[in-house]
Image 1: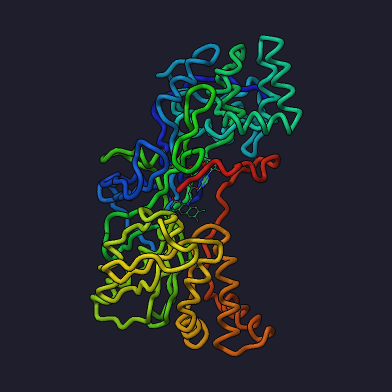
Image 2: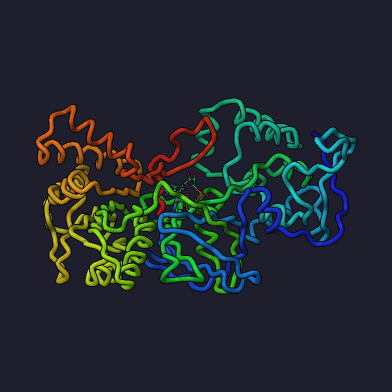
Amino acid sequence: MELIFADAPGRPHFTEYFSNAIGEEVLPLTVTYNEVIAGSRDAGPCTIQIKLSWQDVAMNKAVSFEPGDQLGILPQNGDDMVLKLIQRLDPVPSLEQTYRLMTPNEISTIAGPNKEFVRYLPPATVFDWFKKFLDITTPPTMMLLSELATYATNQTEKERLNRLSEDPGKYLHWRRSRWPTILSLLEEFSSLSIPAVVLIYKLPLMQPCFYSISSCLLSSPTCVDLTVGVVNITDDGSSPVIFPDGSSRSGLCSMYLNQATIGATVNAFFREKPQFHLPEDPTVPIIMVGQDIGIAPFRSFWMHRAELMRGGQHLGTAIFYGGYRTQEMNLYREEKLQYQNIGAIELPTTYCREAVQGCAPDRVLVNYPTNEVVFCYDQGLVQMVISDNAFRMYESLYLQNGHIYICGDFHLVRYVRRILRLIFEEYGNLNEYEVKLALQDLEDSGRFHDRCRFHHHDDDPCLVDDIFGRIVGS
Ligand SMILES: Cc1cc2nc3c(=O)[nH]c(=O)nc-3n(C[C@H](O)[C@H](O)[C@H](O)COP(=O)(O)OP(=O)(O)OC[C@H]3O[C@@H](n4cnc5c(N)ncnc54)[C@H](O)[C@@H]3O)c2cc1C
């Protein structure tokens, strides 16, 4: 479809637009705290704790959420990248003028024939469209390359773009070795002469990104904490990969939050996740298994439990099995110990993948003065750690109808399922069929809660597993 710009009067209200588009109330939250809790902001991957407050939101809405819920963040592209991209368009569009998107001829819409193209973008400046609405960092798809090839004025570049758009092998190689953004594509294919309106129409929209809420309303009634692993594309998990154009790449939303300064506004919305809520009866035991950044939702659990305890509520046990890649990733370590001291959680064992000198690959390493026991990580470690507490697991989940919550990568759920099978077999003296029924009951009665995910969410069908082990995120 052909589109053209038309002048639009006034300044549009994006928050309202986002709320309508997403179907959730989007709030302009204010950053009140943003600190690194593991790693370093400037080198390689790091983890941050960020607080977003609704105290300044004039309407001071009655925000409500429960431990286990999520916050959807609407990320924005960096000014620098957007400005460079706009300078590369042909002709360079105005930065100040607010436009609407129109079709040259009337098209039929539900509301009758219309020339205004309102499908997804509200009136805005070209700068705002690229900054707040369009995905300019995900590598261009094969289909987009084929469409953009028509705008190459140099025949060799046109042919190369066409080859990339037709040959999945060549495309994947190019994509993996360059991790291209729209800007780097325009730099690599310098003869591309693309009008702004074409990119605005063809580029995918930016999607909201979800984060587990890492605090609870009872202890923080005007702000929400997130624990965010900042995604960097690294070679071995530590040094950023430098691409042929001299640049490095990072995750859009996690880097957006990483760079958000105190006082900045972040558009966000709350999403209820009843599947990951605490049991209604707080005396029911719970078990939490979290790996690396998977600790994020559990912090809201124990904060909430501590508040209930302060209110005189009697609580069931809550055991947290935490695992982490490096000692540094033992996030909120001091805080966890404080919550353990007041009885809001138990921390029987933690495990750590980091090789510690002189340690056998599969056994206890260190006894901290705090009584923490650190294990070396290997494939079966989660099972081993849990099996050291096997009876407690059996007691909580089978005898006392407790709930189990798992958060980490998708391997973790597999491990936990496997170990539960063994535990039920051993301590419940159950046969294979009975174990199956017991596990089925755990799931059917809504006591098995898992928030585990694959590490990448590319929707390009060519790219089922394109990470090459090179990206190490949170
Ligand atoms: C229900 C839910 C809850 C979540 N809670 C949290 C949370 O509490 N804390 C948190 O930090 N994240 C959480 N995430 C992940 C978060 O939503 C983002 O996916 C993550 O921050 C990366 O987004 P990004 O925009 O920075 O990276 P993108 O721009 O989306 O990614 C850039 C590239 O890196 C790859 N990539 C993305 N993440 C990883 C990764 N972890 N490892 C390796 N490669 C990766 C992508 O496939 C992509 O190719 C949660 C996700 C879901 C679905």
